[in-house]
Image (cartoon, rainbow, N blue to C red; front, side):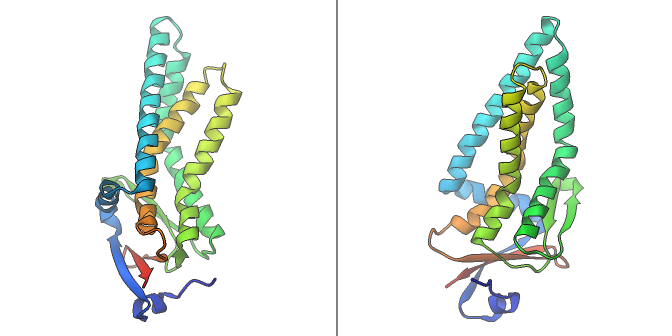
Length: 210
């Protein structure tokens, strides 16, 4: 099934504008979606709480080992923290970009609002349906999770496992925005939603078929 064009979304009586999101205010929009809840959000919040607790336990364990004279796990914890707030951000957005390409986007742009700690990948004026946006939103979550679990299994008896475990825990926080945006598509189970970005306007639009 071919997605409707932007012109069709804007001018057809078959579609209703349900959200107009200004990119600098994306955090407020995401927070509202997370507060609004829904089955997907509730599941993710439980998962995120578990990951935060897991991360805290990993940090505590590394400190305990450091007091016993084994500083290697704590060094890995510090390295993981630096990695997460530098390289992992880039990897996260590149995975979004790859998913956008797989969804048919010709051009993918990357950007950031550093003062608000917002990073993004977007495909200007490329319409995405529910299935395509789900792929784009969940790509970093799925890839990092799978790689992390495999690495933990391989490195289970090695101190480097502390690095991987903390990366997995912290990355769950990075995915909250993706889940918040994706939840728009699942507000009504049987509804048909579409979205696209307008780079010049720094906005994203969400439409529902009526």
